[in-house]
Image (cartoon, rainbow, N blue to C red; front, side):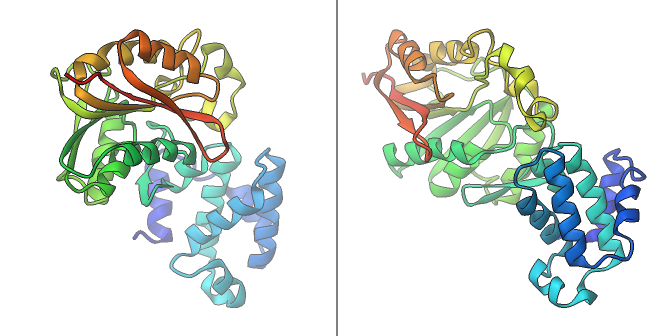
Length: 312
């Protein structure tokens, strides 16, 4: 695990303006850790970040590791001025509404901790509904899994981590995203089960390539993108967000190819927006797919359309 100095060096390597955080350092001069925490919480909240207290805690725990925030509050010797400088550098980025996952460089998903950059979507808890739906529907025997638009590899790697007899291919059009996914596969000790391919959706895959096909395609209506939170609008890849005029462009391409890509009886699961269950289900039915259903996330919103290629 890298230490505070390594974090500071990495920030410099990434092109971050290391002078930008100096106002924070000046404001924190002479303050205790408790007061720095209070000041940072207020700054985050004033920047429009509703969970300012939680995020201040996340940032502090990241900088203080392996010590905890509670330990450092009890023992001031555990918090150095060098660590304060690292905290200021990271906090300054977050105050510019860079997603916390990108500031910290990782995001928990399922049981995994995945590297995240601006080249991939931050994995979200809602997507775990897709993982749960597939695990509930599929057996644990050998299976070939395909993840279209794999991004960080979150869905693919979460499923492979639960099914050691499965192998999978993560497909993405972005070389940068594929590099992140490959690195995550290695870090999660799943590189022997996963490989990665550059392709526009399933174009480069052979017929009957998958027993199970999953995807979290872009589904946001183009006109809505400008109104999204800055973390998403300004810092996540538009390629993974923009679903076209009605949000369904990617589904039309993927679903039309499912009868070719899936083996007879093969399973598919697609993440959807909360209001797209009916329209995506209709596209699947028009393509001749069967057993179509809609699954909800923990908030009770429609989140996954699941079904199969007809057997035989």
